[in-house]
Figure 1 (cartoon, rainbow, N blue to C red):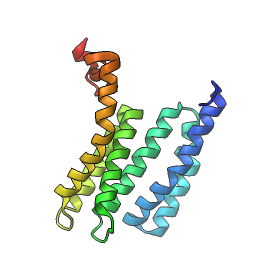
Figure 2 (cartoon, rainbow, N blue to C red; figure 1 turned 135 degrees about the vertical axis):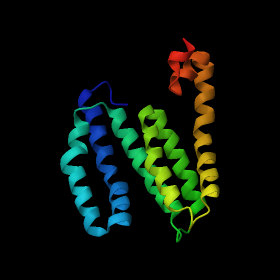
Figure 3 (cartoon, rainbow, N blue to C red; figure 1 turned 30 degrees about the horizontal axis):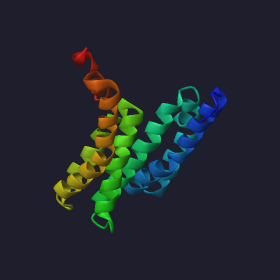
Length: 168
């Protein structure tokens, strides 16, 4: 997509990092208010975000943007005043698996996600939310794992889910 240009790949990483500022702003605003959101966005943009990802490959930026968007939708779905909790949960599941597909370490987005789910347990039907999120994730996971199995067999599937050393 970038024609082999390292500059173009880095530019994509920077653009995705800038896009990730939106979900990060939303998450900070819902938990700490507008002032905290502005400070968070500013620190992201000037500190670790685009500048940090400029030195890395582009998969980190993709995984970061998808993971932050997943957490944002997770927070929207778990909000007691959410108008579309099922759609947000489903989309969060899709984004979670896309983030993991782009970078396995994105699985750690589950930690703050599960903390959000636990904090909303009394106000929201969390089991229903988790079912919708898992349904969204399976939309990505099933064809992904089937295609990996068709190409690489059990060894490939083991590598994808992080257990490659057990299958060799």
